[in-house]
Length: 84
Image 1 (cartoon, rainbow, N blue to C red):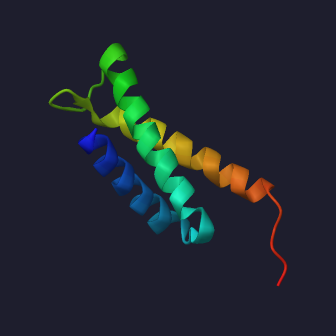
Image 2: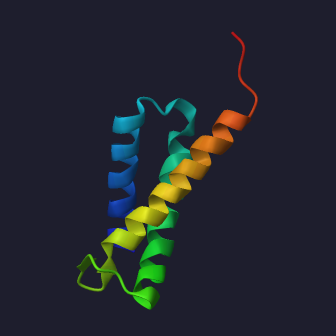
């Protein structure tokens, strides 16, 4: 669980670095990334992961974390925008 949180936070930082800004969706990105890393790790143990740290599947957890963050980014663009 600890590695899933660390991998999730690292992937969020990389996502924001590459994407520019996160503003109000940063907590949702972090939650999606951490849950995705945890789910990806569970998936990687069953399917096999070529890049492992002990029993932790790094490649599968990062891929599912990125998939979760992309879903959050897409859903956030579909929502209403705030007019100032």
